[in-house]
Structure formats: structure tokens, C-alpha cells
Image (cartoon, rainbow, N blue to C red; front, side, top):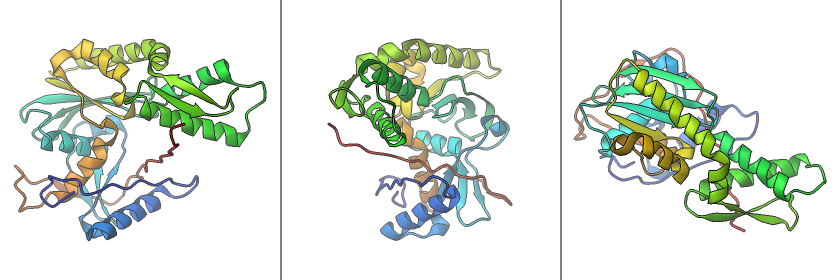
Length: 296
């Protein structure tokens, strides 16, 4: 991010080998990005996941120092992105719904201060369920009688995860795998049919959490990879209407928010300084692993 926080200068992603220390991998990426753009590690901000319920009563926008790199919470980075892009009102209270690979969290936060009023999490509604359901459907419909080798299984999993990213943009994509004919079509309508009940239940759970909560919420924000899918957006839009905020590239708003946190300087034209909190221990960061397959 440029020093004024207005332009994204570049991104970088890596595949982390199984068993490698994630903090080491994350710091290596930080150093690589800094070298490419003439920055230094001391100015970087690394976003780390946390236990959603531990956020309650904290300032999500806090930047923690004391280690090899400054740290910020995933929720704080998401909020920074929403604030700087003008997607939420300064005096409002919002619920950030983040559907991650292992579960879904709902965090109620004050936009102006970053104070977290409430938060909850469940593993009943997982982002990985989309790829898992499509994978099983493809094997049942088009798979051969031969058992899958570990390599074929891994390649199929990566291919289906890639398809879930592409299906947000295209009505149909082709996936290679251990199928009769070699490749098969994955249609968006098929994904919708497989996942409609699941998404509806997830939306009902979120609605129950927000509406039964102790705090009035002015807007609901969708974050996480599955939030790109038209199905998810449509179901939540029917529930929340104009109160729903759907950022572009919802899977990457935390990363962009981290860049905005790093770009924030005392001389920048931002409304108020961020709290900087020294810390003795560092949470272990999650490094996104990505696999890419060419369209067949």
C-alpha cells in the first residue's frame, strides 16, 4: 500500500509446505514484499487469527509490537478496510460475518473506536463445506471404480477449491480429475442446488445471533472466501436488504486492511491514531495457501 493508503501497489501469495513453521513462512513473505517495494519489516503489519470470543471487550484496531514484526487482529484489519473504503458509517455498530474454512464467526464492533461488543463462532457452517460437497458430487456422478491414489485425491481437492473461486465469476468451469472422460463441468447451478439448504441454515443462524444479541446492529458485513458466491450473497441479501455490506474480494479484505494499517502514519490524513499495544507473546499467524489450476 502506498504511504497515503490510497493505492495497492502489489500482492504476493505462497504455498506453505506441510510441516513448515507458519510464523517463519509469514515473516519470509513480509521480507519479500518489503524488498520488492523498498520498505522495511519494522513498518509491516502481520494479520493473525484469534479466538472470536476472546475479542469481546478489546479494541480490534490495536497494533501489537514487541516481536520481529507488528501484529494486528484479523477483525481489526477487516474493520480498517471497511472504514477506509467508506463502506460503513463512522458512528455505526456493525456485525462482521466471516465464513472461514473451519467455521463462521459473527463479531459486533463499534466502527468509530474498534471496540468489540460481542462475538461468537461455530464450526457448523464451514467454508470448506462448499468444496467438500462439490468434490463428493463429482466423484459420485463421474468417478471411476478405481480407488483414488493420495496424489489424485490431493489434485482433485485443489482443483475443486480452485473451481469454487472461479464459480463466483463464471457460470461454468472445467475441472480435471479421476473422471470418465478426464475433465468435467462444474456448473454454478449445481453448486447452488447442493448448498442452498446449508447456506440458508447459516444465514438463519447469523440472523438469530444478531437479532437476539444485546446490541443494536446497523449493518451486516459479509467476509471470507464463500462470500464471493452469488448464492451466499443472494440468501443474505433477502434477509438483510440494504443493511447488508458486500465488499469486493471479501476473501482478501483482511490482507488489504493490514496494508492500510501499515500505511497509517502520524502525517497521514486519517482521523485518529491507532492504539499501539506492547505484547510479550505473539499469536501464531495463519498463512493462506493457494493452489492454481489452468482452466481446462
